[in-house]
Image 1: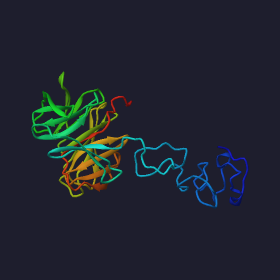
Image 2: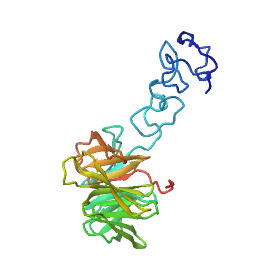
Image 3: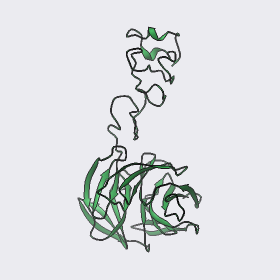
Image 4: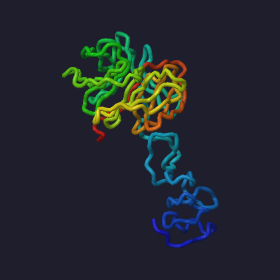
Length: 288
């Protein structure tokens, strides 16, 4: 929005529309076209130090009120699903202590969960996979992995299975499609999540500094280490919009930077020890 005039902040009043001009710094420090709140400038920019927060912004899943309406993450699905030894719950990594019971565990030891492209929740066992149907886990198929730890939706409509150094793209209908072997310094200890063809995986690092984050480029068939996260027991990975979320064996919710592997714990659900996680929505239709 182009400036129509340069007015002193004392001129900010009800008869001057804030959107009509960019005020001097005293009223619009972040130069986003919205005046700061308060009696002095009478605007509606709830954080005038950040141009990415104003009434013009779209709310996204995070820890801030992006559009200055006084609400956090309104009308958005910002939860992830967490599998504990005996129960499946939905947790919100941005609003701590918000949890919802989803279902009991399937009839057998489960190792992970995933959201399928059909919009159903799937569970990974030692030898089989189940699908949640009307609050009942129905066995669907056996799978080709020995000692699996991770299970996630593929952007090709299939699933990725992780076991040690082996990563397999697999379909319950077609069976094994592609198999890849990771470098010797990688050993998958947790989950995986596919974000636009990049499969992020957690590795129980032998080095101090928590588990490490790895990524596999499914287009170039290439494994890459992103570094140590500083957090241990990353047994579940999921996606919330473009944010990488982890759940730990200690009941912690974690946000991870997918580029640097830097991570921070957002909260803890003390009654749960998570063994896996899944996105609450299928991202099958999101372009690569």
